Length: 122
Image (cartoon, rainbow, N blue to C red):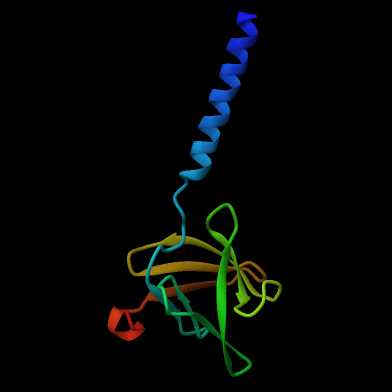
């Protein structure tokens, strides 16, 4: 009985430790700011009231970031739907004023620069 209780406590301890590690992972995406890449003509926003946008076929559309559980892989979806994925990316490599985003469909890498507050409306 004591061995069984000790084993259960050990398993619970391992499970709680694993859960704590999972939820404490540092995200690889910015927590705030507005980021821009000229080559893609894409703006990624983490600011309330400032939409993320992308110009596709000469039309600017609003997109929404949806992150996977790993906190760096994401989809960009048209703002009006949950099903229309327009970009599948990975955000690894973040500095104070830029982030590195990889387009997972073709492996291309893009650097997004942090826009100064006066340029992004914050």
